[in-house]
Image (cartoon, rainbow, N blue to C red; front, side, top):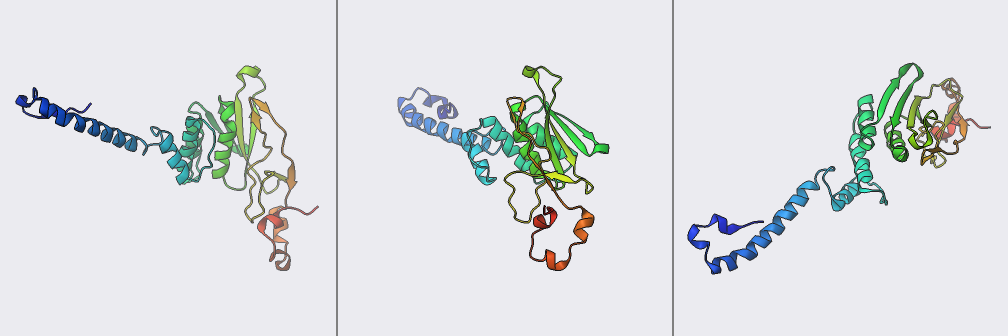
Length: 232
């Protein structure tokens, strides 16, 4: 607590008049210091309270949700990282913003990155954040380690590159046909309480060689998404 009397000469300490005058000032200074302390803490994602987290969410256009404060804090941290170059190190930082104990390994010959998390309930949030930074030709999957007991299942995200020789890519049911290719959900599974959900259907697409054969008249009035998907 602030005590201005301690800064005054000793002969004022026993003065009831100075005490009555300075006590209200001490209370107001305490309120001021408390507000300054909260303002400074709200500049940091790690220390921000509910108000500070809400301000960060507003700045990053993160939709309001009923998630815990820690999960909301993790989402904000990943938004800061999204402005960086998509590298393996940046991917690690994004995943570990949700689960600091996550294991991440590369499988370059198979164009895959395996993300192993001990927090299955956060896996969908991890996948959503990873999907926002990876290039459009990269696909993602969620897998479960079936060798472990149900109560100790470890959730795993696998990210694998889609080669032009592949005949299928996965896509989200809510992909908007706005000319932007969204191929970020290859064999995607919804994970709830450690259980895998229904696999999203696959869609055929044209190879690079087939795209080269499309003439100008056919292509001029179509988006890239319309040209990429094969017509059945």
